[in-house]
Amino acid sequence: MTSFKYVVLGGGMVAGYAAREFVERGVSRGELAIVSTDDALPYERPPLSKGFLKGSETEESVFINDAAFYSANGIEVRLKTPVERADLINRKLYLRGGGEWRFDKLLIATGSRARTLQVPGAELDGVLYLRTLDDSRRIRDRAAAGSRAVVIGAGFIGMEAASSLAQRGLEVTLVLAEERMWQRLFTPEISAFFRGYYEARGVKVLVNTQVSGLNGRDRVESVSTAKGERLPAGLVVAGIGVTPETALFENTGAAIDNGVLVNQFLETSVPGVYAAGDVANYRDTLFNRQRRVEHWDNAVAQGQHAARVMTGLREPFEHVPYFFSDVFDLSYEFWGDSSAADRIVTRGSPTGASFSVWWLLDGHLAAAFVMARPEEERELAQECIRTREPVSADALADASRPLERAHGGSV
Image (cartoon, rainbow, N blue to C red; front, side):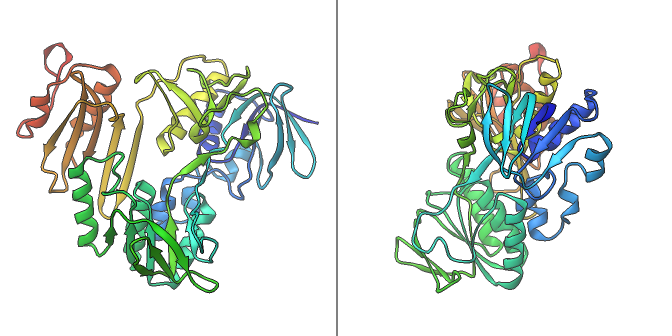
């Protein structure tokens, strides 16, 4: 039986950034191992729907650490190796094809899997999802040979894929079941801005539209909607959400509820077993609620934090939820949780490409969207959410003067 002091189960971004942190924390050669079903070393996921998909970034550029990093630091990396069974209580992993790994401490980083379309024709060639490097490769290859694409989904994956494919020269239709773009997160004004921006760049946006079927003999040729439309497509990309990969941990002692439940130290209900990234359902102490986040920043921050805790720095995980996105020539960022806000303030004009939106709750900043604004707005967004400083709605709305902290810490 092979034994390691630390094992990371999963080969995504959590693994890559945790490995860096383990090394910085002085883990010795032979103490750390990563086991992954992927065929590639841990890589960044944002380029898969942005630069790599557009063709402006190479495959080598997306890796978090190169092969030499793992070799030089004595980190065992086992790729294309599914784990058949996890015995968390007895600290063993049983690998497919034989072999057992024993661990002292385990970091669960199995991530999530893409939800698939449940309509006739969903199995046709050319119906693709965007979750892994392989997925992005397949979409790139199909895009190079095609001229029309349908992208299904109102969230950031759908928006980014539609943008990237349009920039590759494809005729793109973006199909949304909701009444506007990213309805769960965006205000109506933000949704309207992005819809206009996409349509001005040739993307056809269909809202309140359900996909009823995919058509073709062996490969997809068109998409049918519940409204009776038939949209020609040689490529379909569906970004309709993900599901956390928890099946391996059922009946292992780890509590499961929309992911693997962890405490403020990212530790599961099994001592010495931790979880981070998409699979981790953690207690957000800033907003006092359970949260499972499916974005790059969370995977990076939790991977680093878990490594620190596992090597002895037992501090609670406290982090402002954050994500960023790039579409066409725009970049925007979002911090916080807008779900309970009682007031929304817009700074700048939402009809232009430079504005910010601020969600307030009881006079405190709960969330902020910032696009092409001065640096102080980015800094204040993060700091005010973290510290719960009182903010002035009038000051936020007045774009004629810079934002700055007033006496006593208010804005």
